[in-house]
Image: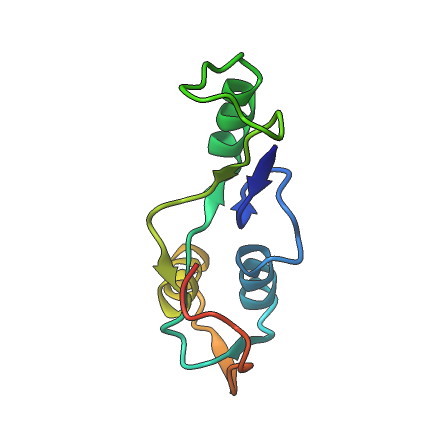
Length: 113
C-alpha cells in the first residue's frame, strides 16, 4: 500500500501550495498563508512518485511474514522546505514580488511534514 505525500509537478494536485503559489503570484493575487511561514513541508516531485510506484510493483522479500499480507510504504521527500522559501522560489522564477496575507496557523496544523 502506497501513501503519497505532497506530490507536485506535472499532473500534480492543483489544490496544493506549489500550484496555488504559482497561480496567485503570476496573476498578481494575494498569497494566502497560515502561520509565520516557517512551517515546512517535504514536497515530492511527480517523477519520484512515479519511480517509487513502479519500484513498489516488484515483489519484495520480507524477513518476517506480514500478518496483514501487505506493507505500507510512504513516498515523500525527506528534505522539507519552509513555506517562505517556497514562495521565494516562485517569486524568483516568476520575476514578481508576492503580496502575502498572513493568517493565524490553525492549532491542528503541524509545523513540519
